[in-house]
Every structure is written in C-alpha cells, then in structure tokens.
Image 1: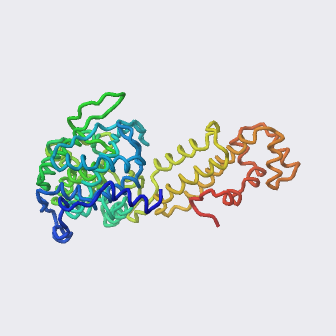
Image 2 (image 1 turned 180 degrees about the horizontal axis):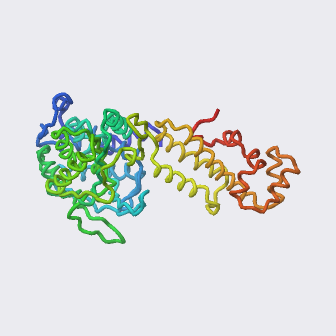
Length: 458
C-alpha cells in the first residue's frame, strides 16, 4: 500500500469533525521541575474527548501498526484494522464518548520464561490495542513527569542501560550490598481496587475510569472459554506498563522518603545499602509495606540480600569490588548458548545459509543489548563456540564421504587432507576442531557469509 493511499485511508477512518475534538491541552502538561511527586493530575473531566481525537487516534494507529502483534479473540489482524475502522470507528467512538464501550476478552498465550516456568500473556484485540494506545498517549504525558527518577522501565527516554549505569554508580559510592527484591507474580496479583484508587486520584473523567476498570476485568480466553478476572492485569496490552508504573510509584515514593538508593525497572527493584545488616532491615520493612499497602508479595526464593556481583539485574552483573565493572550475567550467557543450540539443531530443516541468517539476527539483538560491557575475552570465547557449532552443522549437512571431500576441496583443502578428515569416525563436535575443517570454515569464511561476530572482525 502506497504512502498516499494509506494516508487517505487514515483520513477516511478518522474523519475531521466540526465539533467534538479535544481542545489543545499542552498548556496543562506538567513540567518535570514542578512535579516532585504530584498526587493528583490537573486532568479535566473531558479526557475521553482527547483520547478519541483524530490526531491522537491516527498516531495510535501508527504505533499499533508498527508494533504488529498477533490477533486477539476476534481474529482481526493489524493489516485488516484500517479497513475495519473505516466502517466502524464512528460507532466505536460514540460508545467511548458515552461510556458504554465494552472491551473484548483477551486471548491467553503462555510463553516459557528463561528461568523456567511459563509467563501468561493476554493479547487484546487490535481494536482494543488501538484504544489502549490512545489512552496511553494521553495519560503518559501527564503522569510520566511525576514518576521517580529511579524508575526506568517502560518510560519514554529511559532504558535498562540507564538503570544499570545508575546501579553501578551506587556501588561505586560504597554500597556493597544489594536488596534484590522479586515481586511474586506481580501482573497476576495487582489488586484492582487499590490500582483504581490511584488512577482516580489522577483521572476525573468517569467514562475513562470505567473503561480502564473494564480493561482490567477483561476475561482471559482459553479453549473458547473466558475466565473471570478479579485481580491482576493482562500483560500484552499497551496500557498495562503505565498502570504498573503508577502502582509501583508508591513503592518508589516510600523508598525515596526513607532516603534509600535504588533502581527499579518495572517489577524488578534493587535497593543499595552499605551493610548486610542494613539490607536485612530494609528487606523486612519494605516487604511489610508491599504486603500491607499494595497487597503484593515478595518471592522469598528469588529475593536476597547479597553483594551486587553475586546477583543479576536485568541480565547483567558487576565485577567484584568497588570498581563495579558491568558484566554479562552467567544466566544470560547460558540463555544465549541455549538459543544457539536451538538454531543450529540438525533436524530443523534449514539450509546452512538460512541458519547463518537466523543466528546473525539473534546475535545482532543480543549484542545490541549486552554490547555495553567490556568483556573481550568472553565475546571471543562465545564467537569461537558459535563458529564451532556452525561447523558441526555444516559437517552433518555434507553427509557423505564423497560430498565432504568435495566441500573441503572447494574451500581450499588439499585432496589428501580432505580425505583424511572425511574418513574420521569421530563425532561432529570432535571433527569441528580438526585443522582441515577449521581452515575450510575459517573466521574469514564466516565473515564473508554474513555471520555477526560479538567481538567484531579484525
């Protein structure tokens, strides 16, 4: 679809109206310098008009389209959304403005966690994702400046790397112990009444309050049946991260009022102290605060008071001592190796070049996140291990004695040496380190076929 055609369809889906558009509320935006911890927003009772405004919904559509994602319970895809809105947006908008819109159930999807177990996601329909995105855009510009400087998750202009840098500065300032707190099934245990009471302090539009409550209570659809949700909020919708930050902002305020140094990324919170005794005291008091005030539980088996280099935070850890150099956590290295083993499995039915492409795509993303560390020895070791796994795969792909000789000779190996290598009775892992195979599938060869190197080529 061409750009002009798509723009025209957007204009048809969200036509201009002579009335009903939200006024310009930029002058009501709260400046960061004025919002140390504003308890209430200056939002009017007409927020829903701004949510439904043409400009806001057009931007929301672009975001939903860019994020892609799976269809919800109605089967409507992102690609079909624009045509659907062209026919139905007028009716949907009328329901939103009247406060009668009812969200659909969310589709339940279970994905494996890297540490074991499964994480339950709730995938809203694309129409509900569009509406949630529109709400997010309006509320986030009001709420985000009021959040703590020590909160880094799901906020514009903030990242996990900034959280790691902040944690590093706390350790270098002498905080040799960390209170590593893991909230047990946070998204599944959010109390609706407590969360909505915090939302009501900032939102005065009762239509929007009712709609947010309905999104929280939307049932999870599994095997054709929608369960009733009395607590928790589904991960997978655009609005959930903002609501989680709003609820946990109360934890941030408590920590800041107590004078603690901390970093929080979503429900992952680390508090930095100077002694183990102080850490144990903080763990006890904050656990009681969370249970009594927010009705949230600490996962005792995953939480601890320890040295920062004995724990991991957002996939990273730190070197021993006050230097606190950022390091890749051992668990993150294990996950990388597990994924590479999956991609290089011999029974996947992929050509060698396809596997190279998939491995490179994964390594590009992995390096984009973990590339902030300076561990050249680790990166070299991983590069060498990955190349060896690919040599194993190539060897099994070549299959026969004659074909292996031919492939080795094609890559510059002498006929006699190629025959000796091909005649080896050992397994692929042993053969992958033989000089003939290493020269045939050298570092230069992998570079020429586009394999990403974590430590760079040169």
